[in-house]
Image (cartoon, rainbow, N blue to C red; front, top):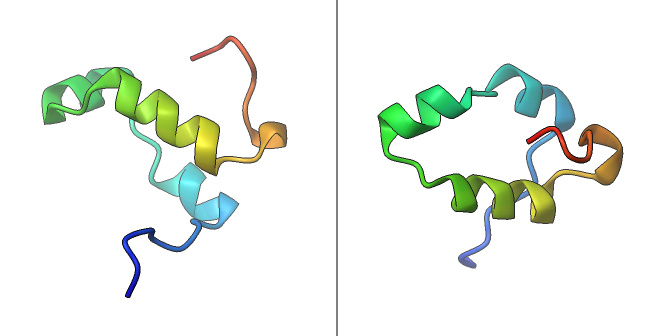
Length: 51
């Protein structure tokens, strides 16, 4: 198996969304989240400049 997980369907992304406060509480670095979103979420699903 490769090291890259399969893409996540759009509806699941909506269902598993967590807030920035939750990310901080879980120790998830903001730049990791931003990088992942830019590389894995289609532009149509991202409102530019709101993150």
